[in-house]
Length: 239
Length: 324
Image 1 (cartoon, rainbow over the protein chains, first blue to last red):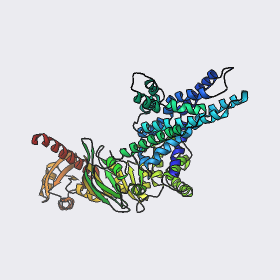
Image 2: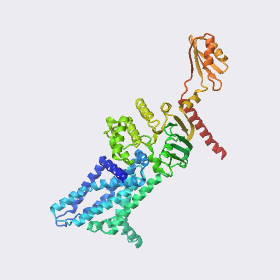
Image 3: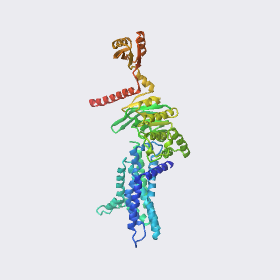
Image 4: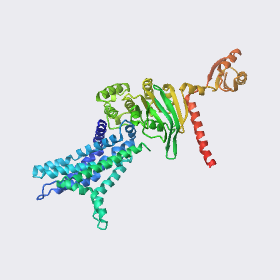
């Protein structure tokens, strides 16, 4: 545990000193502020629901930008050699890196808190959906970052990691949905695709609903990709 | 302390390491020599558990690298080639991080870091960001990192690559201080470095172990049978014929240097003919200003054995199509 936290802490510190990270935070704050301004119209309910749903789409690009460096940078610089030859397990390394990225992601969400405070200052929003919406965002982000860490363990190029992760997160959040609504596809395939679709699972959180099915979906998907990441790192020792 | 047997590594169709085996006693400093691409780094990466061998195995401090990888890795302090560090971290912060990965307590880490920062000459830069360090200082951080958990075995891949002569001397002295306390395997292609620090030299070329002995013994093998240079006050022809009178001299040639002549004598076999030549010239009352053997060093030996390995490899590969 101590080792995992040491790796997570280093990862987090490395993110906070890199200019890319501040760029990511800046873009996130700017774009979510635009969402907030568009969604908040006089006469409409004071809620964060649509801001949160747009944020999930934004995460399709933002999460890969956070996770792309986790392993790719170490492969490119060669520092992976020092890490993998330490008496540390592959699971500790992968989980540590994911935790570090997750910590950064959680900090990146802070502009949303500012918006929520503003909302509370000028209106009387229902706090339930806001709370569940944030919980949902943490789950979605954790999942996307797990995908990103896994992809990053495949390539020594951060750009490749970013693009491949975006392809996967984009497919899960948007791509799958367009196929699920395609009437010419057989029913079983459509319902299958509909189940994989992230927006569907997330919208319940944005509505104020914490459904066990959705929690299980995100947690197990995160665990699956972290597990695949561990196997990928393990396989490097046997090639 | 380090024992390798039949280590073989194929990278796809390329054979990088061909049945390399050796045993290193505790406390020894062993130089691992070879031209670039000989398989030094591959062998070290296998020993440290970064790469698996295709076949064969090795053990570190009694722990097999395949069946007990964690115990084997914990016994090693490793400096990978090129010293990859985290450039955004500060020196002390980086050492703390490495210590945590090694499972050291905070107090242990602080004590060791204080000692090592001092010993590796890092005191002026201990709070600097690694990115801003010179190559020499980065190398020291790499060494400090390898020594941090007081491992019984140190594996250093090219610890002096890219350093200036003063820095090389400093690193060499640091390594020499480790003698007896740690078992050190260090790779290099700079020969004087191992001639001075190593107790033993292992030379690999083309993935094969081509020599394994003490530097003195290897140097002796080269020195024996090397040519003798004589400078005496005589006509070249006279000096030549005199040298040929010495029974153990195979051939001699001389040239004029004005009043003096310089001759090169090749002995028969491995004989040392210097004493015989000296005595003969003294008997003839000829003034002598030099009798010496051509400087023999590991460099020549290195060139000899690696050339031989290269020839063997090319003979083998050219023999293959003929057989097919």
